[in-house]
Image (cartoon, rainbow, N blue to C red; front, side, top):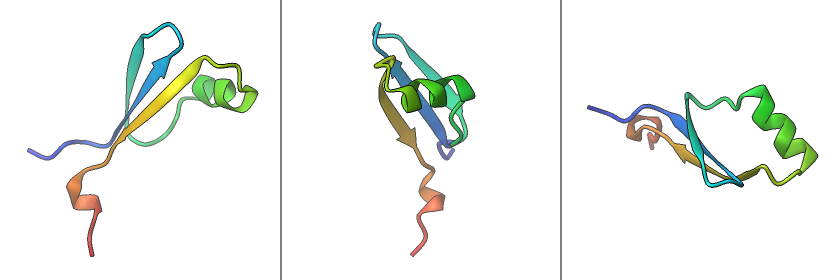
Length: 53
């Protein structure tokens, strides 16, 4: 079974949230644009099928 595309957002408090797909939620976008330090890290999972040469 192939992995689905997803984003994992890691917050300043150490918690993480998995978002299916590759679109950031509006609230996360606001934190990033404001550079308020709430979002420390974003990990991206992309299915292998997306890499075609």
